[in-house]
Length: 201
Image (tube, rainbow, N blue to C red; front, side, top):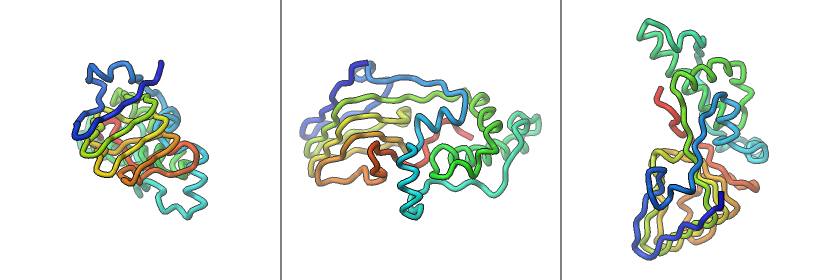
């Protein structure tokens, strides 16, 4: 796939979405079958996780819940048991994918993998070259976009990037006076450590 630039001129508004005809060619669609695969696509790189840990874990991502659920409970015939199991597994799963210390919940991988299968998870990743947002322009990243991989992001003085839901970003550099993407962790490949809703619990 040949990466293309995305440029928003002054005052322009645009939504980056897999449903957009203009952006149809920049997306890949992933059907992850394991939590390890999801972490590889959306989570912190090994270098980023190490940087966060060495910095004292100030942006270490979501914390796992105090309780855990058995994989079989995700499909329990009892609605209350099923709902509770999916809720706590979702929380633990996000801690595994986005946290800087996935080993804390790695023992729950069988439940995570079952969770992915139950929800038939799909990830939409946008692959772009450079993104430039000029003054007064607004780039909205749709809820259906789970990750943006790009080279360089330039946000001019009054330009904005608005994310509908949390996103994973992997970029080479962020330029401009605006810092709307300040959730990035700078360690080569930049990635947000926030929670993206892959599937509803």
